[in-house]
Amino acid sequence: MAKRLIVAALLAAAPVVAQAQERDLDSEPTVGKVFTGEVAEGGGPAQFLLTLRGGQAIDLTAAQVGGSDPAVKVYDAATRELIAENDDSAGSLASNVRLFSETNRRVRIEVSNAAVDPTPGPMRFDLVLRPSDYRPKPPRDIVIGQDYTGTLERGDEQLFRFHGERGQQWNFGLNAALESSLDPALEVFSGNRAAGEPLGRDDDGGGGLNSKLAFVVPQAGDFVLRAYAVGSSEGGYTLTTTREQAAPPAKLADIGLDTPATGTISAGAREHLYRLSAAARQALLANPGPLVVEMNFTGESEGAVDPVLAVGFETPLGFSAAASDDDGAGNTNARVTIDGSMLTPTWLEALRIKASGFLETSGPYELKVSRPEGSD
Image (cartoon, rainbow, N blue to C red; front, side, top):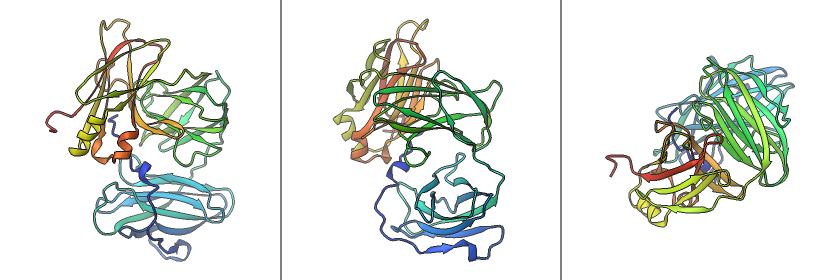
């Protein structure tokens, strides 16, 4: 699966300039439950009110119109609790969430413009409501060392709950069943709901399409692990869990453009962390464009480290991965492509590159950040 760094979700907290008037969809006639809408240029999200009947489930899509990039959030209208959110779904710029309510419930739907560099004028979209037989799976409590199996359908998810103490490292592996088309992914959230910005995520870090996520607990509390199917994939899965005391934080090293850095993955140093050097950040600001990050094993291939790359940002709660790769560069080497033109000086300073090894593999490696050929 191709990798690209998406920062639209990280920029979603931009100040609201104007607030649109709420539209009550219960009172609007429509054909097939398709509503047209728009977000004014520089304005706040378009807002809709909708009543879900007890036992009702719907599939809600904010569809693109003319290349727009809508993002959707759904709140409980009475409590303002965030129920669901989505930006890009199934490989498109459309946003999709599935809603189910045990009792009658009034919800507020907010559609905003997720484009990092929006075109002039209003952003138009279609809000599509379809009946669904969706029923959320109840969350499962994690017992360390126990494996969990199940099936994820298209767009499906399974939530797991655990309590972590500061400094613990929780290791999760989500593997697709044999002969399954499932592309599994993992996210971890603070609290008791899979809502808001995830504290950690991984898609293909476990080899092939499988996921591997090492989460260091920033502070004691309850957390939710979200296992979900990417795009239109579906199939059986196995979740594995282990827990250990986190190793000391990796030392942060600078890396420049076209200047390889070398290191060794070992039992005492399972990962290494890098940031772009000041010169590299200045060069990217002066000439924005894509960057390619590659991690290759060096030395003999027999028994060499199997490189795993993660690219993300330093946050108040630690490193948050936004893209990862295991064997994308061939021969077990890893490659991640970053659209550097989307990054402001602040995000460039916060950008981090994590180099590690798959499972217990170890050995020397070379890390390089460069421009794609022909991009200069």
